[in-house]
Image 1 (cartoon, helix red, strand yellow):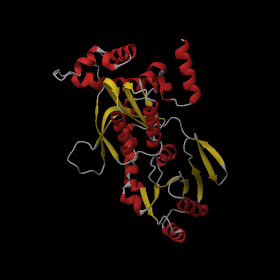
Image 2 (spheres, rainbow, N blue to C red):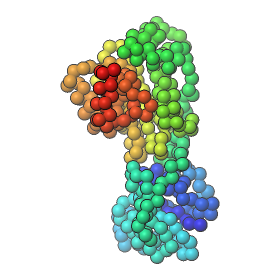
Image 3 (cartoon, rainbow, N blue to C red):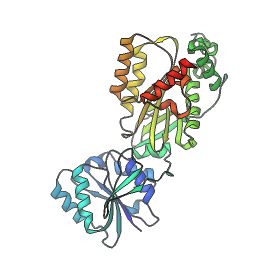
Length: 355
């Protein structure tokens, strides 16, 4: 019956997955943390996401930048000597992880490190080796957000208006522009006041992307939502949510965030495209290093090389994974739409022009 020890940092997912994989019914949970992390309630958010019983959770507050003091603080904490420990040294800074490693050399312990993007835990002690990360752990969207201190306060349930999202997308792809689709074009008229105006102006595209990615990645309903209203768990604002994202889902324990936009008139100008890009970049900073950001946009872009290069530079500088345009939905199917490697893009273009 091993106890689990984690070093707390801004990156919640490595500790979340470690505990989910290795916890046992009688495990106790130890969290090495700092004043900075406690000021952000980082440990509490992780405990809440894992739904751990409070009486089994123990915090060890240390100074992150003083090796001698860390040594004394760890030594002073009454870790049960007779117990065995699984120690995750992935979090914190190098000094913290090294001092925790050194401290637990005097215990019956196994030391783990979880490289980003790897399917293996690196075992560093008592023998060097590897342990596969469990592929059966599926993190819900609520649990992922909760681990980072956020709540999904609301979301729009999937529904099909008329025409259905699938039919509208087929018409957009066939005609090459949303403004050429009658149902969408009529809704842009200032005098159009029917209740389906929001649906036709763009809500349908969120629904289409929801259904597309739910099927492509074989997601449970708990792992995906559209029009997600997100609020900090400790927020005291009177509003239902602080921010809203068009589409969010969790796949293989990584978070994917989308802005879905429909531009039914003319070419989409740079300022209209840049706004959702800046929103994605600024509002997802607290969702972890593995948060992947996408802009899905239906409309035509300026073909001016200077403007296109400016857009590409902005995308890269803001850390946006990819912009999905009409061509992307025409050329790709399933998960392939999110692939970014150059050889794949070239082959897809050859198929388009040779088909």
